[in-house]
Length: 117
Image (cartoon, rainbow, N blue to C red; front, side):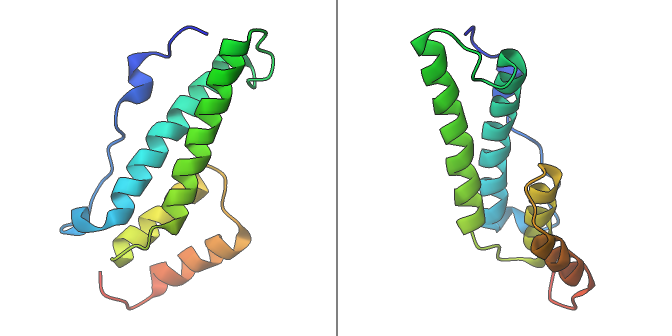
């Protein structure tokens, strides 16, 4: 496979609430978004990845897939320290299409919660 375009590796921009930059969930979301974007680009280039013929391409596919999974699991293991971070995290998971009904319900609860920002 050809190398992915440089744009696939650019960091995502996250809108941070005032003071939310210190919340570790934002770094975890950024790392996952970068890996996810590379995964999506490779998916599009290879029509799902498994149509690759040579071993180097297959290895690249598995590396990209594993990086996305690893950063997603790290994101889920990161405890938000702010309400804004928690909401942003759940919104991110919903945005990529990996949210459960439980997560959607949790987001609704957070949005209505009187917890500190």
